[in-house]
Image: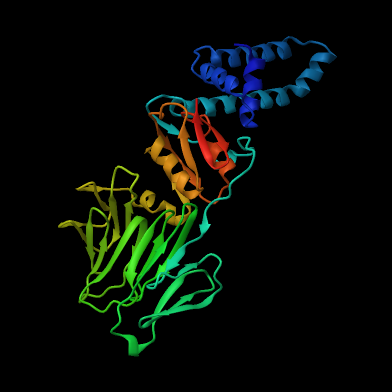
Amino acid sequence: MDFSRIKYLIERYNAGELSKEEWSEFRSALSNEHFFTALSDDLAHTFAEIKSGETAESNERSRVFPLLVKKWMWYAAAAVLIAISGVLYFSTDRKQTLPAVADTRTEVPLKHDIAPGANRAMLTLSDGTVIYLDSATAGMLAHEGSSVIRKTADGRIVYSPENAADAGKVMYNSMSTPRGGQYTLVLPDGSKVWLNAASSITYPTTFSGEERTVSITGEVYFEVQKDAGRPFIVKTIHESIKVLGTHFNVNAYADEAFVKTSLLEGRVMVNQEVLQPGQAYYNGKVVPTNIAQDIAWKNGVFDFDDVEFAVAIRQLSRWYNLDVQYDTDIPKIRFGGKIDRNLNLSQVLKVIDGVGAHFELNGRVLHIIR
């Protein structure tokens, strides 16, 4: 293979400008046994030219020799790095490593861009009144039973018991996030709750009984206040999770093929099975789990390490409020890598474009193409 062509493809790769045809050519080049031979031959030719010079011209060449070698080595190093990642990046039916986010100097061409999700949620009061929290001003929002509901300056919703006269009244509120939204809530007992995109939680405005019970959909992270006399119960469509005081994450999206409860600290009981920190209850079984990956969303990261293509795309669809259309078969690959959730969609697509498929955006419909 001609070195000038290799150099051209590497330059196009680094600039993020490879066409689909050039992607195919580049993939073929990386798997070609003569790929590095071409690089070596070009370097050997450069060495021979400089060594054979015996005139003033050769002296001039000697002065530029370090520059030539440095430039060649830059291209060779780039090729080596690309080829090493290519062992996984371009293999089929295997884990495929994502390029570093820092390398996204250009984006996949889009007619328009989509910003990442933000603090967006709806609070539904016991009488059906809906408060859109992203546009609500900080301060008191409502009285519900014995609690006063406030929005803090940093955007959290906090329930504070203040109306003793209404202590016997039990009312139910719910908070729900849309696709492209997330939110933080402090329950009447002081427990903290983080809602991921397309999620919801229903809860009483005061915990007055022997148990503190809430119901959720989607994905929710909890830091539960300890109260030995009143266990905290989380209900999903399929499970009941009992805790006394602990940190844990529940992933119960209806469009996923699993329900997963992951424990960070403390103890929880899921359907009569007790979890220890670092374990998860996954589709009816207690298994070890990667806690950092399970709560990466809460920490502002997509952790796609060993994640199926379709599962990763569903995460993107929730966070960027996208509908997904597969114009090809779903790629049978697993990703490897992490992406910042604060990036615009174009930057994320730049990272994953070519990993199993290409992408086109039409309005808010993301097309998966070959």
